[in-house]
Amino acid sequence: MALLAALWCSSVAAADKAPIFVLNSLDASISVIDPVSFTEIRRIPTGKEPHHLYLTPDEKSLIVANALSDSLTLIDPKTGEVQRTITKIIDPYHLRFSPDMKWFVTAANRLDHVDIYRWEPQDATTPLKLAGRVRATRTPSHLSIDSKSTTIYASMQDSDELMAIDIATQKPRWKISIGKLPADVYLTPDDRLLMVGLTGDEFVEVYDVTQAAPKLVKRIQTGAGAHAFRSRGDGRHVFVSNRVANTISMIDIQSLAVVAQLPGPGGPDCMDLSADGKTLLVSSRWARKLSFVDIEKKQVVRQVAVGRSPHGVWTLDHASRR
Image 1 (cartoon, one colour):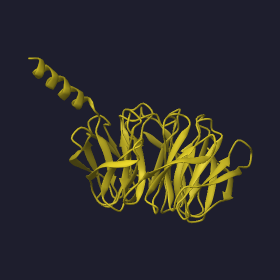
Image 2 (cartoon, helix red, strand yellow; image 1 turned 60 degrees about the vertical axis):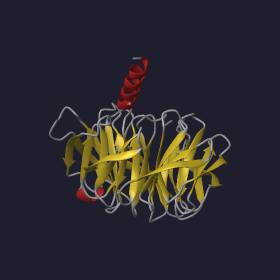
Image 3 (cartoon, rainbow, N blue to C red; image 1 turned 135 degrees about the vertical axis):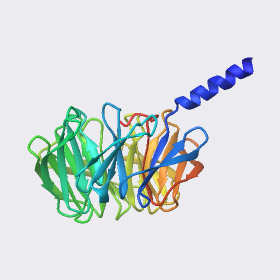
Image 4 (cartoon, rainbow, N blue to C red; image 1 turned 90 degrees about the vertical axis):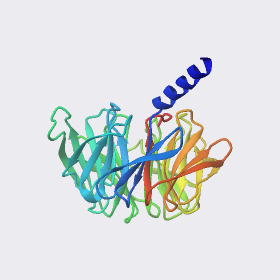
């Protein structure tokens, strides 16, 4: 009886674990990974070229942006069931909700603009209302929004620029030239420093954005193809994937120095972090794998085969993103 009870409790605990979602950009699908057996249990069809995904601040929906289909797929983050599809969202490559959940922002990577929508969930037919479209120079890539929901930061990868946008007016505050092929941007929890991964180089550039004009504070050498960020959730460290070097660097936010290097096989791209803070989930873009990296051991402990060109990765059972 004791053995049966133990097995029953174990199965219940496993059932309570939320799945891991991986976007297969070239297959127009989401791989759903069982976090206990570490197997792909099913695939969810999406629109064309799903690249990034984001949880609504109320944690009720995981939003997948389908860039070439001009649509968003909303899924249940606990079950993976498709809730609905929102159409006529033009070229949503990257996406963010403002912390106050009043604004939804997308970067149109192909069409060179940033769109700012009002979020009105009470309107079941059209919950997103376009408030403003901000022209970007060339290829807006990644977005970040400050904790006060006042400012959007956007990188432009093919014009090597960084732009700040006022959310209330939907107008640019400033735009500056930066390093080669900027990709992801990470704003420190105190809204003071903005980090930019330079995929065309081997550096992360750090800017002080507390003044009217941003100031370059430091260039941190991480590895070739510095690309995407994921906070360690301790308010002190942030990871950056170096896509060309096949490594992941951990940066100390206080010293602005690399304090650890981890393996990142197969062109590491997006990352998530397990709830216990021990394991990085990494989309290995060129290897068609989801890689699990033990942070303390600095080892790849397992890989799961997924679809073509895996990009965004996310799970509800994650460590803090701040």
